[in-house]
Length: 543
Ligand code: N01
Image 1 (spheres, rainbow, N blue to C red):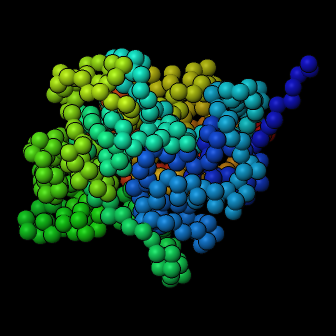
Image 2 (tube, rainbow, N blue to C red):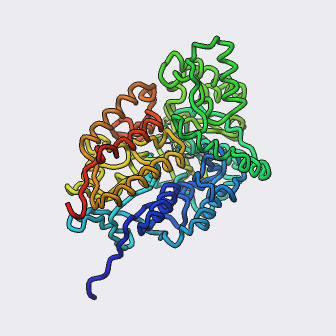
Image 3 (cartoon, rainbow, N blue to C red):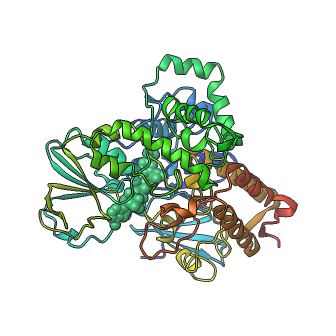
């Protein structure tokens, strides 16, 4: 056979979720040829993989979607916090409206990308051998695409079924009447537990750190009411508000410190945020010093604990779920939004084992052994999370101009220029990844603001005739310094969390998400384009 013709595009996007959809639309409108390669069999990004029982988003309508009116004017979610099925229905809607499928190849697992200096292009290769040249390479693979399974001794010997929440079977699993072990109480674990607790025969939860959950206050949406809200401008107003907030929600911290209020006033504020309003307001619409000052954090934990104690009757479960001494400052690990979690774990068929007191010594053919003895189960559910934030990109063989991979670039610590690019990796941006507001923001909001900047940058690329664009080392250095300054001013370093990579044994503990807020983030991105693109070095076809 002669040499084969390799397809060439202007822009290759990896992953078929919010980020790549909005980028596809924007860049295609600028006249670029764009393709999406997606590893899964359908679009939805995390909502393709996250289809475990009870999986749903914890950002409320209308902001968990793309902000384009043409998309939301004729689509309405069923619930305030949509579940994975409804989110998939949404992605189908966007696909159709924007004709995305014609530009997307599914089951294309990108596993290598090498920058070809001669052509000034990326040669990208998939696991099935597909190759493509792209002038611009933009992975949009999120922060949770590398799952983590702890090395429990004997896990391979288990004769029953093992499922990880991050790769739940697309056909579903019937757990009715089964004896189930569930490991992990992060967002995925909490949702699984509250969903399956009522249907399984026995559920044993292996908890390492209690999740300081907040009530979701879920409700069905009334389609007519939503239509009214669309007509009277509420959707647009809510979406617009996200531009001025710390985390890209439609609400923000109060302009008040905790002790500006009396104890009685505080109680009312906390009650309103946690019980009446629900959702993340107790976290992100509270006193502005709660995440910065340990003293200010204490009353928040105490209030939270009293609410939980009211809902859990079993004293041992009270001790494990809402301990007298806070496991970490409130809000420094991701709080989950629960629907009926505390009532479900309080059921007699649900048992909690604290793995700090009783580590999992061994998984046998029939169950899990701790020093309390063997618990025999039919199914093990691993809700043990991800090699979060950096794992997604670092697992790929993406080689920069000096031959090293991204994992090599980060061998002494994660470093990026503004959480969107890296020196030595020209003509490449990444969205919703390390050192961006990522896990401290609402996903669609963060990615849309990043995509707006990418669009602006591509306009400059066109205007200036740029063929190669690379972040400067100074820009990277400056960003890492600012990452640390912002992080160290908060209470976040005090929690052993995946926000700083502390969930993976042996991994360097370091800030992985920008904790300075979205507004400052977007301003920094924009400033980098000023003064003839001061944060970047570039060359043009004629240079
Ligand atoms: O993962 P996690 P996740 N032995 O890392 C425990 C998004 N998300 O899939 O806390 C025993 O949070 C670990 O314990 P500890 C969202 O951003 C969103 O739940 O480290 N246990 C923890 O309890 C979310 O925050 C949605 O002490 C072990 C759990 O496993 C992020 O994804 C839904 C262990 C892992 O929790 C990740 O969520 C789902 C060990 N050796 C996901 N190792 C929504 O929108 C780990 N654990 C609602």
